[in-house]
View 1 (cartoon, each protein chain N blue to C red):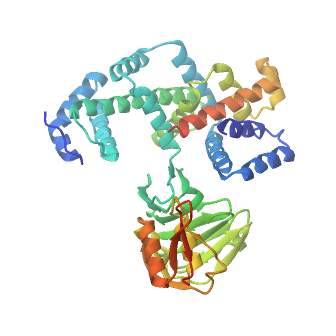
View 2 (cartoon, one colour):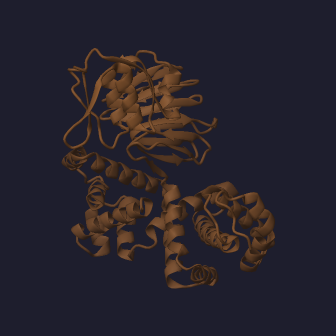
View 3 (tube, each protein chain N blue to C red):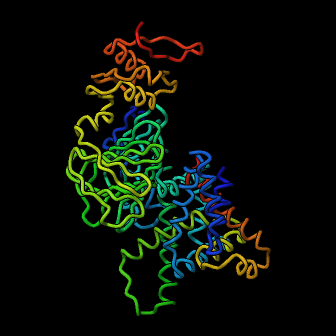
Length: 167
Length: 313
């Protein structure tokens, strides 16, 4: 397999490995429509990054893997959103596909910030930030001191900062 | 420093926060521009949580719960891919968060051009920091420090706004420059038109600006400055420091924004000396030589090796 030159020719990459990538994705998704969409996204991502590539197939599959994982995550959030929304609102509020996608994207990003935190810290943060509880009330609900709740909340902010501005 | 900013964010998170807390946080920000930058970013992160309603909150809990307690079909697949991919996961995770908090910084002497997610192009001048957010009803660049030239793509439903602490500039057309230094923000229109509003002001205090118009905003007030040549005002984005019969002191100050090793000079001694010409910003040493040559000033070296400009004897 020839190495691709310094400035990557994505067109050539697509011509020589496009079919292979779609097959690779079909194996992992068992759905040819989704595989085609994800292959498209993969090449878009490649266009944006403009890296030098030695081994195109291993590079493409690395990028595709990330896109597939992102897709799986977002679908999971979408399903959860639909379920919660249906339970709360019933038929009263009509959801459009755009609204679901937008909400899932938003919540996925919030989840990325919050999900790797210890449960107590996350709960403390959600009580203070989402439920607008005061520190004393959050402390009572969690059974810890007010100072501890504040430390949890600060921990979450520092964690988000590190994720957002990691270098 | 991040821990301190996180402490302030927590301190100010509930309505229990007092004016004393806010003053103390502000005092900390004033200690050091880096404190201020860190705090601004922290607020930027905090704002993202605002859109979470009770449905969103329950979704977050549900998904976290599911991911931590069972490895379902999809979880299994994700895990399999993760093992296949080696260390890819953390990078992807961080990258995804970062695209959510886009953030550009330039070093002293560096200029960059970036294309934002909406297709708008931004030229970023030396020693600048900014972030970009796009939501359903607006596109907003937050400029923390330094100077940018924005060339904005049309989007009627989402106005393009550059914000600083001092005020905002809303694009009604295409190209304009926003610059923030010390405690003032200057807006210069290159093409079409822009609406500038000082922070916390009413609509009556805003100004509509046309090509060549320049305003300065500071402490909630807006002042119109004399008209400028739009091409010259955007010259830095082409890599040129352009001067048209200007005091050399101001031009040297401007050049120092690009230099790792600033040029020394006595402003009082050089008053009255004027300079014209275009000097290359990518090569600040050559720019300095050019300025010295066209003014007949003298260039020497201080004991520490840094350049010094004086009047020729």
